[in-house]
Image 1 (tube, rainbow, N blue to C red):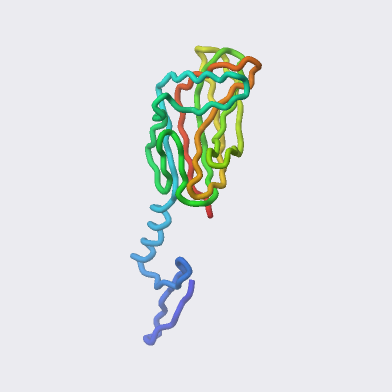
Image 2: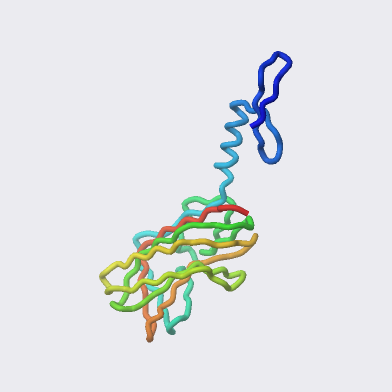
Length: 183
């Protein structure tokens, strides 16, 4: 904050905003707040109440989590991020964080792993595994997300079976969110 004395001996308060000193008045403070809230880049979506079988053979081969028409994921909200054909594209370089939560079922004892894959760079940051407990039992998996995206990088969610003969996972529901942290 900066306080400047006026000719009438009153003080005017200034705030630093986007590298410039601005006179502090109610409307300007409201605009500062709205700029921060409305321009947060993010994406939020998922799918529910489905039974999508993804055959994960051979063992350790990653499969794209999508359906035959590439419209499995329903996006509820996005800003500064594109989503087409079940692929996420970031409009702004920066660090992003988020979470994927997913429920699936499969043959008891089959081990599956999930990840967010950078298609552009052919890399993934983290993956997490879960074992299926039977065709009629839901297994829940949560994957924390952190990525350092370049402008235009494309990402998709993937699954693989690490069990010796591979296996089939039936996906039932999922929800994810990814939001911009900093540049």
